[in-house]
Amino acid sequence: MIYHDVAGRAGLLEILSWARPHDSAIERAFCREFLDRVPGMTADAFGNRMLVIGDRPRVMWSCHVDTVAARGAQQDVGIDTSGIAGLRNSKAGMSLGADDGAGIWIMLNMIAARRPGLYLFHRGEEQGCLGSRWIRRNTPELLRDIDAAIAFDRADLGDVITHQSYGRTCSDAFAADLVAALNGLDPRFRYKPDDTGVYTDTNEYADIVAECTNLSVGYQRQHGPKERLDVAHCERLLAAMLKLDTSRLVIERDPAIPDDDRWRRFDDYCGHQMNFVDAIVKYPSLAARILEDCGVTLDEFLAISWEEYMGDDTDYRPLMAS
Image (cartoon, rainbow, N blue to C red; front, top):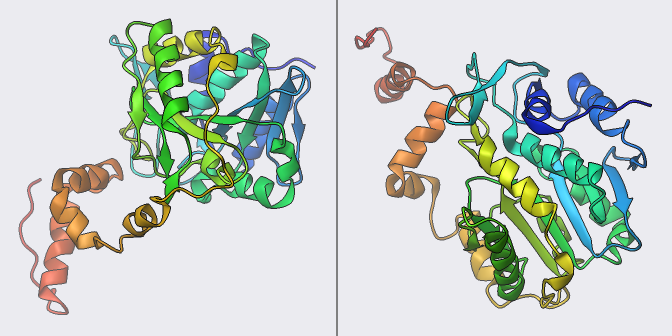
């Protein structure tokens, strides 16, 4: 069986050209075309794909196959002269899908290079980590020998995540080792430990696997039509992963012992110490950027604001810039 050659930028662009919301026909077709054709790839009952390279590997590599998109479709993707990938004809309801097409591309190329590890291509991450949650509940023995779960699913260029969701998922010692190794492999890297992780598939394994982290792969403004990917960074990260000696990374965290800061961070995460309005007041530029990335124009926002202000008396409309 012939499978897709995803080497180089052409392979990355081909992956990004598939908008694939969870459980859509195009997402299932993508899995058949790009994953099921890889020799040794298997699937569980939920549809997560997995492959093992090496004898009882201790590291699991993680990404997810779904993207944020209003509908599944082929999309036109290009790279500008500065090496930044984006949609050529973007509009509301679309996204580049580098979250997590970049992770898929890195892992498929690692597989092609026969780098040891358990490779997990999760389904439904954007819907609440459905695939990883299914594994944790139904087949946790899959991770019995795994000491470290490393996801390629973080925005920006320099984060090695130590905390996700409601607490610590990775020790400072492991993060420091990984940071030193990555920065040592490429002097252009500026990786550092970061405790502001949100929620990705490796978080689901934090009570099973000692070290669960997430690495920045170079995308920004994810989940919207203005999403971008620093292709050169993604390429450099792949080159580093092909050389990384994971056997030298210290394993320190005990997943059976909750950290003291777990519940404090859970309160923060759930907004018990800050409501939504407070957060927008504190971060107005971020709120505006999120609205813009979701395709909301200034005129639309002002019109909605006026309707909210006027209540039922909506016969009058303010003039908007054309």
